[in-house]
Length: 147
Image (cartoon, rainbow, N blue to C red; front, side):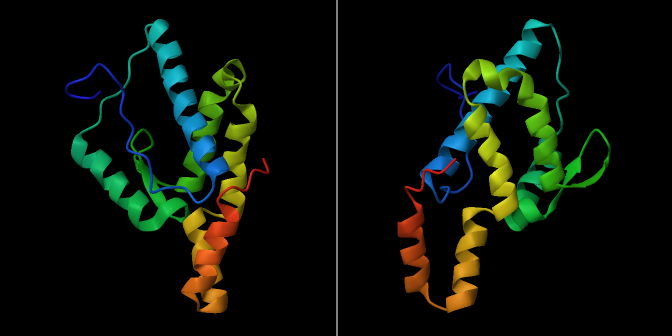
C-alpha cells in the first residue's frame, strides 16, 4: 500500500526489453492481485515475514536474476528462482482466464526459456564485443510482438 494514497504500488524490475515482456509482467502482477483478492474473500490469511527475510530475497533476485535461488520461507530452504516462478504461475492459474490474460501469462514461460532481456543483451555483447550491436538489438527487439 502506498503510505498516502489508497493504492497498491509495485516496484517492478528494471525496464523489460520488449513491450510484450512488459505486458506479460504486468499481467502476472494483475493475476497475483486477483488471486490474493479471491483468497481474501474466502477469509484466507497470509503469513507475514520479517522485512529482513524479504530483503534477502530482493538482494538475491537483483544479484542473480532468474538463474539464482531464493529462500522459500515455507520450506525453509533455497529453491531455484525459475522453479518458484513456475509455482507462482500455477498459483495464479485459476484467475488468469477470467482476466483475459492467458496469452500474456503464457509468455512468462517463454521468458524463462529464452532468458530475460538482460540475459539476451549480455549474449549479444559476448558474441560481438560491441555496445553498438547491443543497442541495435535493443532497438530491433523493443516492439517485438510475437506472443
